[in-house]
Structures are given as C-alpha cells and as structure tokens.
Length: 206
Image (tube, rainbow, N blue to C red):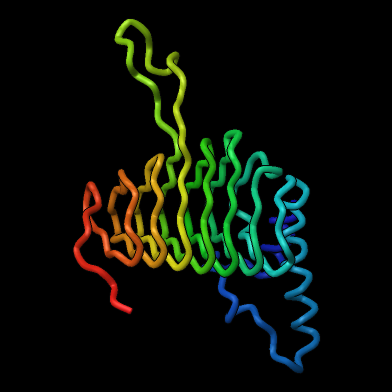
C-alpha cells in the first residue's frame, strides 16, 4: 500500500533508478524538501515494519523484496534499487555505509553476508552463500540439506553486472569483478578479476 501511494505521488512514468543527486532538494526549496522527506520516510516505513534496521538516509525502492527483516542491517546512505531481492534464510545480512545495490540483484544470507562501505554492485549480481549437499546418490539432493559458510565483501569493491559470488568467498578491499564473472574462491585486495571462474588479470596500483 505504501509503495502504491509513493508511486502515485511520483507520477505514472516508468520507474527510474534511485539517485541521491536526483532526489536532493534545492537548499531553498522547502516544499520540495518536505515532499522528498515524506517519500523517503514512507518508503522506509514499509521495511521498518518488516524489521529492517536502517537510518532515514537509506533509500529502498518500493519494489525491492525483503524477508526476515530483523536479520537485515543497512547503514547510512545505503541505496537498494528496484527489484532487489534480499533473503537472509536465517543468516545476518549487513550492508555498510555509502554502498549501492542496483536493480534486480539477489542477496542470500544463509551463512551470513557482510558487505562493506563504499561498495558498488551492478544490476543482476547474485550472492549465493549456500550449497546443496549431494554426497549420497541414494537420496534426492533436496533431502540432503545445505552447507553455508557465508560471504564477505570488503570496502571499496566494484562488482560488475551479472556477477555471481559463491559461498565461502571473501572479496578483498578495492577489488573489481568483471561483468558476468563467477567468483568461486577468495580474492586478494586491489585485484581486477574476470571470467568463469574469476581470475586475476591485473592489480590496481596505489
């Protein structure tokens, strides 16, 4: 209901990506400031009711989908864009300050998902912190349970569109992961990684 109300205020045009620069009011336009404040408050209220811990400076698109909100913590100026799916599945999900999750990303938190500060995650990235057990051939895979170690994304990381981060991975500070890459093991800080599986192609220099 809140999402429908917000969309009715914003107009009937197609939904665009959220942006702080687009929604910041003029310093002297108090009317616009009040509208922006109300829109952000109402948008966040939906997720606060679900138990998500987030400050007012966060922005979450109404079409984002969240469950088990009490296990999700968002820090200041986090941006969650349209169609993002966040599912803790019993683990904790934390996203650090000034990080952006662009449209249609999927964040699973089975073993815990910790995303640092200043992280940029492009559209369609998937964080799959879980694996099916499949040791027995005498039983269905879905009967054999899961294993999960969790995922850590350190500060100042850029993850390209459609990248997949698998369970047990730590992505070191300052890494860049190319679009469509599949990360199957931990990455050293300040590396540029591409491919399936993702491999180091260069190092960033200070």
